Amino acid sequence: MSELLVEATGLHTYYGSSHVLRGVDLRIGCGESIGLMGRNGMGKTTLLRTIIGLVRSREGRVRIRGRDATREAAHRIARMGVAYVPEGRGIFPNLSVHENLIMAARPGSEGRRDWTLERVLETFPRLAERMRHGGGQLSGGEQQMLTIGRALMTNPELLILDEATEGLAPKIAREIWTIVRKVRESGIATVIVDKNFAAVNSITDRNLILVKGEVVYEGPAAELRERPDVHQRYLGV
Amino acid sequence: MDTAIFFIQVLNSVQYGLLLFLVASGLTLIFGIMGIINLAHGSFYMIGAYLAFSLTGLIGDFWLALAAGVVVAVLIGLALEWLVIRFLYDRDHLYQVLLTYGLILIFEECRSLLWGDDVHGVPVPPALDFSIPLTENLSYQVFRVAMSAICLALAAGMYWLIQKTRLGMMIRAGSVNREMVQSLGINIGLLYRVVFALGVALAAFAGMLGSPVSSVFPGMGNQVLIVSFVVVVIGGIGSVKGALVAALAIGFADTFGKVLLPQIAGMVVYLLMAAILLWRPQGIFGKA
Ligand SMILES: Nc1ncnc2c1ncn2[C@@H]1O[C@H](COP(=O)(O)OP(=O)(O)O)[C@@H](O)[C@H]1O
Ligand SMILES: [Mg+2]
Image (cartoon, rainbow over all chains, first blue to last red; front, side, top):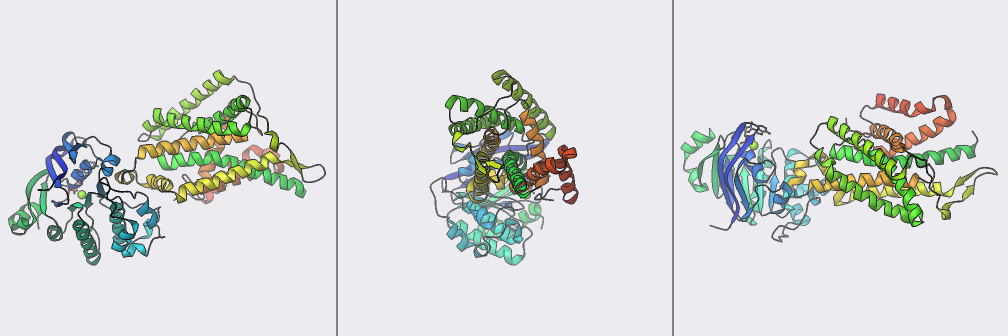
């Protein structure tokens, strides 16, 4: 097992009085790819937002490379090398494509400088053609590429993708998957949440399934393919 | 009106409009980006004027006093954001209005303690204290021309800062999606503090720059505050470009209103606002 990048233990998160995460553990090794699965409303987004400091847990710890990050501000967690591609994108519509990409560009927490503007544009040639356009003028697929490209410009150790292909045409979704595969191969750890379990499973090393804020299944990607019962019971297809 | 007088009125309009822009641009930035209604913004203009009065006396040179005053204003802005304003971001506008109104009272009281309630004046810097003759008996003071030039340079600098620098990109991004900006590793708290201090410095600078041509007196911030809000509303909340256009429009309306419609001079600015809002309720450059 490689060195631990993120170690979340015993997370309990509430929204007011509703108890959403009920003791979740999640470990992510350096360069590891993890699929986070579960039906709608099971707490996947809440888990991700708790880890990156946008939502506070009431109990539990988050460590990043062994350092306690439980109460750390969101921008500091980002600077520890965690990049987030949120549900529903999160481009800045009032900034141009070029500005969206360069506004947060920086070397990584470990000094990584692999992802430059040139490399991002090579990876997303569609963005290169739209540099002067406003972020809001892009199609859904292009906006998603912009959000991923922008995240890569921070040279992260971990890329979190929450429903990155939601609402995209199958052809565009395939382009996104190809890119995610490339990112993974470049050594960046990934956490992927997506409705397309087969696609997730074909990329990840390991999968977790959340049901009502608890991890009910955890296993290597190869295993889930052989377990239609798990699919049936927890993912409902 | 003959052409020379008309020309002088145009220059006066531009000079007043540009000075107003400096105050209003800070107000619109703080409101548009941080969502704070800052009633104390006029007080910064007043503080600037009093700083110019004291520092010019102390240092002996208006321009050096101006530079020192900007430093003081930035420090006041940073401190105030840290002490008070940062607790208002997630609050209702009512709390913001109440608290910043309280700040006006505090600033007025401090002004009274430090400087008293007399009217003061700041001498026009000697190097620019001469006039260009326009006709035999009409002339225009060079200092006023310099004021407009300085305001224009600052407006250009702000355009550059907001449109061309990464700081400007972060500021614009922060106005639409705060969480996303944080998740990209940007310290939004620090960003807001900088924007607030910038707004304070602009208002104070306007107060300093304008001090030699207007007098320095108690309550001077309140007049400016009201007109600045008119500018922000006409220009479109959050739009610096809108603030520039609106401030110039107000400058012309006010100046020519006094000359052409002296009976209703005090109302012209508000009539203009009403007319523009009937045409575009969100302001000239506001988002619907
Ligand atoms: N901001 C919020 N306030 C209150 N409840 C929320 C909020 N966000 C999510 N929830 C609730 O928390 C539960 C988990 O939501 P979420 O983490 O978004 O699930 P998932 O991403 O797995 O679809 C759901 O029941 C949802 O209704
Ligand atoms: Mg979700």
